[in-house]
Image (cartoon, rainbow, N blue to C red):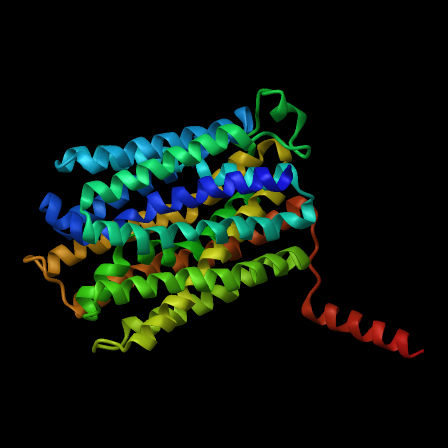
Length: 425
């Protein structure tokens, strides 16, 4: 039963990621369909992600109140209705309203899927299975990068979005049948008890430590995968849509490799979780340096390395949810993880909108150059700096409040030598 419930929640999340990423593939088609420029194109995704981000706290409270089953069914149904509407709308206003609706449904899904892990499995398995949840969700990007893109190219806008809507309704049916509270859920949740502690959760440094960790890991991949990746690769570097789709698929492949490793490291070294996040942020920065500094279009291999480096941040962002949950009481877990889950998306919303505005300002005719993309995408470095500072500021207070003392590296080396000497004797 635990694995059936887990699989059901993971499937709903896979479909939610497909919905979420659909405009990353359909962006250029949307420009033609709605007759919009870069800023308005970014607004479609910004509205969706802003709604998703701002509703994380209400959805977290609702999750603590009613449980994962109801929220997964609600989220899957709302997203399916949104995509069905998108198949037929031809107005900018209607499309924006439907993207807002999509964000509403999406906001309920991931934290509910993660709650199933906490409710059905032992604590030692939670970091690994949280990563597996995020990893499986990446299959949604394959749905958009291959079958959805194929349908969009060969059968048109309506057929492609109707297909996503049908898949969404199937995921809602699976949630109704299989998802239920687990043995590790608090009694209050299983009995629909009244939650509390919102104020305490929002003032907990551990909650914000999770927020900044999620921000640092998630902002780069969100900005690139969800909106600006395909335009940057096609218009900036002259790749075909097929080549751009292959590069987006690299994001999934890297996640398949990185997520289990990060999950195991998080489980085995819980006192060093922030070190892992900061280390991976260095890889992300290296990736951006590879594409932002050169003035000429880059070869496919270099772009593949760039996509691979920023893709590691996706699994790293889930460490933020583990931090937020671990530093708060079980009854407030949904709210804490909802706050943490905002980090990588709020920052991405700001960067996406800023990139669109900058591209429109520099390329008023709607044909931005590689130089325009390089300057606009450099905005992503600002939230990365904020994330690093936020972790360094909140880490100490979170540990002190929890009574956690982290040994220094010198102390660890001394203990290791002492064990070796004891074994020799």
